[in-house]
Image (tube, rainbow, N blue to C red):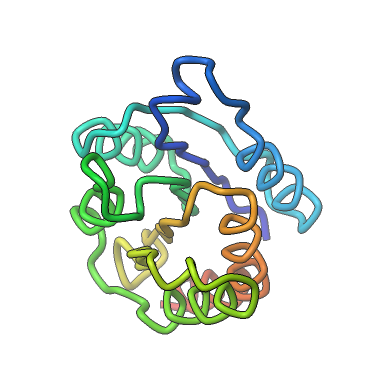
Length: 160
């Protein structure tokens, strides 16, 4: 199953060139290795409206998997969960909880993530949006849980 995907990176420092975009590169490589189409990668500033616009553009382009890296903490500008919820029709709390639980096996700071996962619709038009910590470790934990579920999620959506 070919699922078009996007990675939205929420980071003022990466956008300014002060930090490498290591987590997005790592995620793109893993997603491609799992048979997903090469994801489009976009870096946006830490502001809800910027994240919402990037998600909207990904969905308008037909991308059915949108992974948002960063902006899932509690500092000012960490509004990725709220931005994602603007598009989510049904949340998948078990996915977000599993990602946090997996992360907790590596670091206690995983408990600080406010990451969410959900679907934009409950049928073949639905896209999966997942927010994730922006660190390489947090992004890796997200993919450890998410990638084995992608085929099943889209198979269920496409059955409807």
